[in-house]
Length: 246
Ligand code: 13P
Image (cartoon, rainbow, N blue to C red; front, top):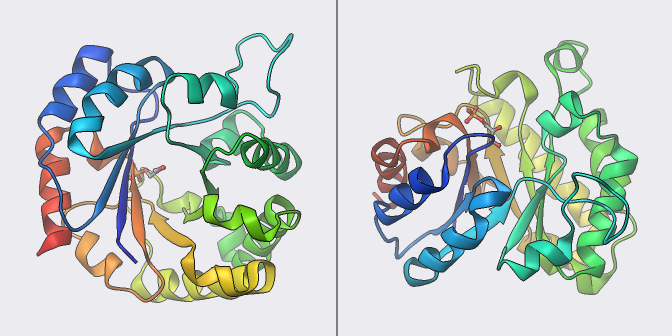
């Protein structure tokens, strides 16, 4: 499986900064690259990205498709501006915007109905880790979001394991933890998706940078990375992606 590196810019980058960044990204032959900017840069970045073979995603999406939902953006609207995929259930959405597993399950359902590929983010908090609940929490998140999917839907699914305690903290999870959790996620996917499980990408996210990306991607069942802070400067991000190809 080709590795996929996704830059999640969160609430950073104005349009001109976004365009400047993407024009300075080195083209990649051996890996897949994606950028997830603010809603407002998706259309412009998509136009530039076509020539560079970079996918453009969205950081969120409504579970509804139209109507009186002030401030929300639908899957159809995202498709209308050329968005290739959406992140669902990022821990910042869960924690700050109180998205529950039930809401995320509805978003997954909506993505499936609208034929929108998605990356479902899962991960435990520090407290849950210290209580030894990591696998239980992740099992529950995967079960709630994915148990209604049918055979035909699995090619739209990727998973990102992002331990909440490793996001933006500089505390990357150890090789042992990443390996153990990714193996656990793969076996849960086998339970849910049967034979299709081996084709589902499982990405790691949480303090990924050029110094650790190579080691992380060499772990069994790690099919890519979701990068926050280290994706905000073209120079740093170019360094990071160049490590993957070496
Ligand atoms: P950092 O790479 O800044 O830890 O963020 C990870 C993340 O949340 C990506 O979605």
